[in-house]
Image (cartoon, rainbow, N blue to C red; front, side, top):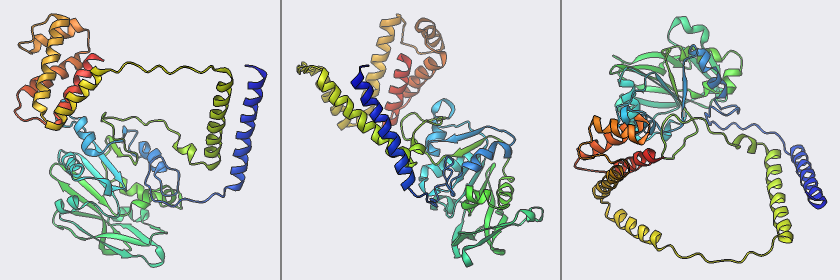
Length: 402
């Protein structure tokens, strides 16, 4: 690195540091009271404190954050991916239930009905869930924006609490009293039930109408955390599936691991502007430095790839006709022809003996080969096909050749 480059780099670093200091001094710190119910957020109405304490509350049982919608998660984690899911434990969702679609509610009800537990806390719930459980919810205005939260069980009376900054409170105005168990009230009014236990087939559903009590502000203020402990003590000591505020919508569903990002850092004004300035100055340095040293590179127009155009034309034709069966048949045919050509195997009968030989000759993982061949056999038994069948077949074949 020559002297000019060193001076330029020094100037960039100095400018970045100076900008960070200036912005930090001129930026007043304000409290963000947005109710995000984000388990990563340290803001007053985030859930980071509760999320960190969950392993202690449930004896270090596995805590699995769910970064996909319930319908996608449970379907992807089903037996062989055909919809018979194998998850067992307790599903917890705090706030943001308005993002649930009808299919998400259906999957959560199926999950609960198979001997599991569903816990949801929000000011209101989707109409599909309320209609299924024969519930209605009303809202009342709180005096002095203070709400009193109490348990029905006398053993939990010491855990009763109050919360401030609460203009309104919700309660179940109607519910079937013969099988819905009352667990708590709001504003010391036995007629205003805000916590219910509902037997549902072989499992249980717990619905709670004050999600704000689980946020950082209320857990860290006075002894309010005792109420949250009391509510969660009704849940069984099993694996916890925690519905995350963060959702990923790519095609690879399943146990998503927490992805690293710069979102927290970019929320800090000084760091954000310092980062932007560094990127701009670096870009300018590269542009001017390269202009002085790099000769002009002539532009050579590449030969047109007519093969790609032809493939696109054929693909668009199939896409417009929506002939999924034809595409599935062709993909299976070409895949089996590739197997015969590469491994010299008879593909007339895709039985267990064929799978064993293919595993041995290809060196692929047993699970990958078995899933691919079993899915092909399953497709051959069907008469009607959908887009997701084609996508899943393509995913299996790509996984086999990866």
